[in-house]
Image 1 (tube, one colour):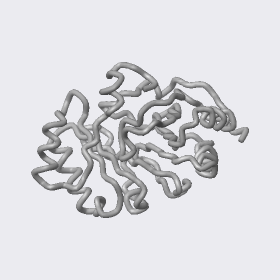
Image 2 (cartoon, one colour):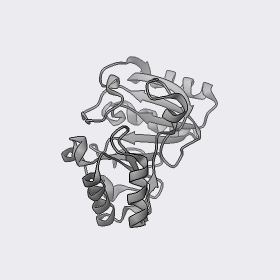
Image 3 (cartoon, one colour):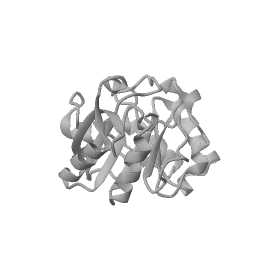
Image 4 (cartoon, one colour):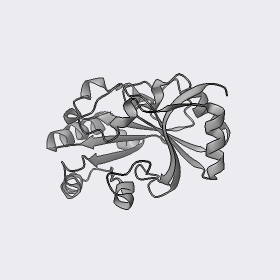
Length: 215
């Protein structure tokens, strides 16, 4: 457990997204990202951070007495010690969520963790970086999240969901880009198509506001 990770933020909050929304959660935001999405709201995580050992992180997690933990970023799968942390959290009985940007194959990581694969729609500017082989590796506990900026993004997402039969294989979450696509508009499209997906809004921003960090 002497391996180290560069950690941007460590905090507890109410889980704001995914099918675990509303639950108390420990967040470990790791430094670094290989993508540059147009709508990114955590650009500070590209470079900010301090080194922490896996052992120290586990001690901090245990000290919260919260059993749900999320590794996020940036892109948490970039760092070489991330698998060590994931394995330890799973072994210690924590429900472990990994929010990954969809560009890195998840197959080599501990699949007892829940992978939230955040696929990039065209308006993100990063659609060519999606590793679509991840969609064949999904298990029923995993989730796919797609952030949408416009109607073209929605059409793209709908076609992908149908092609890979995603709603039959895992949880699917569709989110509007804040300040660009209205949640009501996205809700209307989902209802019109009777699409069996979850409208995924950022509950933590409703609770704490849009400009606060570590929430």
